Image (cartoon, rainbow, N blue to C red; front, side, top):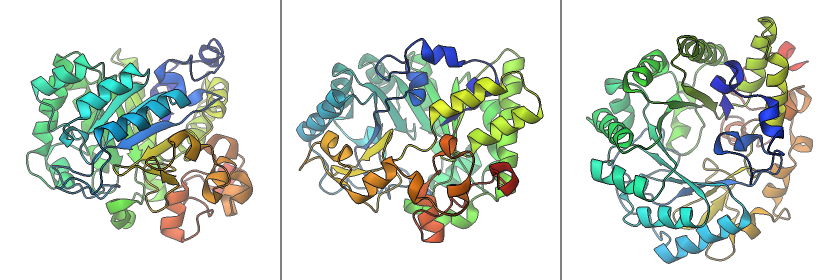
Length: 393
């Protein structure tokens, strides 16, 4: 993830990281992706069940409980292992995680083991009572998915009224004293909603938003033709930067991030060079610390049935199962062909990616996207919008 607000708006400096030695165990949560000893943030898709029908769902969620879901005891065994392994964060996702009856118990257990627990939810099930429960078990953050305002969001979600219920959930979280933010997946259908989403942040006093570039996985594979053009991606990133900067200058700063297209990092830096921005050198160093795509390194996924994947989008390639083997053992086994290559991918990249001067900042971007559109796992990510000149060709 690329923090637009922290990089462009002068709210983080390399010295902030060096003060902690860049060690994951010492860094505060907002600096974890700059650590030099990355242990994986683990996305736990704790259930396949969901009350909505999102057109871009990467996990093929349904209205039913997923087949062979981990029991409470099995889930706790896996959670205890990743805590001992040193994973800093567990992200409870789904399906809709709040449709799993024991999710509050699992969150409480994760926190008791020293993990920072966060929730990725559609927000529609967060009643006042549920928000209080989440607060009581010391959940760190609630990320609510909204892909636009009412009409656009409800079309995405496949259920009328989803936007209003999610907004009520956000308000309930804020009332309970929970940190809450938005998650927005960018595509042709909702690109015009970016500015309204910024207005919503301001009106509802929501402190954070993550703008996700589309990844062609799950039902999202059907939306390849609805991804933005390369020029459209550049324009939307510029718009996000401008709107973030405007809030900052007006004394209403928000935490704004872009996720899942790591060429955003070099693009921000190149824009700052053109502007002769006073922070450009600091930002270059921070981007080098970030390291780019972290599939199989700093982000991992465990599905409802215990299957381990390199990230939450790579659901067609299983690395193992926590019922049969500890997550920590699976994650460190570089004899597994894909895992070994992901942890040292640069020799395997092809085309523009292999020759790009920003490779140490981007790390080859998303391999899943290359495989989905081009059919070659190691080809250049088709969503990279940097020109040949910008990457040094």
